[in-house]
Image (tube, rainbow, N blue to C red):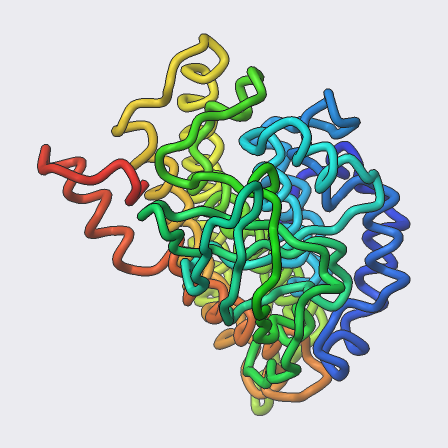
Length: 375
């Protein structure tokens, strides 16, 4: 199954470079600097920066399609695109002067962690920040990193600092998405100007575009679903190629000629296409509200999160099916299917698409109270 044709900003050369870097990223646990520079030049890391700052201010559906296309050839690269692009959405919520400082560089790369693992104390026009965070995806190439922090006024903010002020602890030793380089990182007594912070839960967007009325956590979850959708499409493509060439041991027919394989490929294709269609439908619904100048409703917010979470978990089933049907070939280190299986399982460990999301969205569907901050 093919993903969408090259979305705006993604070129065949970008995808070829990402595909060629898979083994290097697996062994070095990071994205190579030259690939990061290529993606920066194509605008893949800054998709959600407003046009007022020179960004694309992209439609959320374009965001998903772009991440999906990259992840289909290199899941770790797709994940790094997802992290930087969704972080770049903060440009629409940050005070104008701070946004120009952090997001005005067309060659910028952004990352960080939303989890409020830092502590910030107000000192005049600055926050004095200390903290330690995990999951610093793409941090080795980032120009700016953001850390969530509990502030001494009781608020929770995301504070941005130059990557040069951050200490990265290289400890990303994992089973999947190895090339994301999601190492731990920390800062101690760093001064962050107030204008370089975003109030995650009680702030309001500064930019007026529809993109900045779209739910922030919904955008993050959708980006993650794009990685899963690309992985599942790649796994089905790999199986299709293999099935047309492989004759299993003690069999006379090729894998593709077996009825059980045909039926399972059809079922998996339907699962993947249905999951993607739900993601796009949920985006369209929430985007219509945002474009009309309205805040998406609680039901629309829940639908975004449910669609993204459903896609991530459905894609696990698709990849696992392709891996199983491939037989012993899939366990070889030179088979992409083993890597796809590891990668897609790591994707579902992210909080934005974890099983707890089904509980939260189920509460909305049942008419039970849910805090807006949960969606």
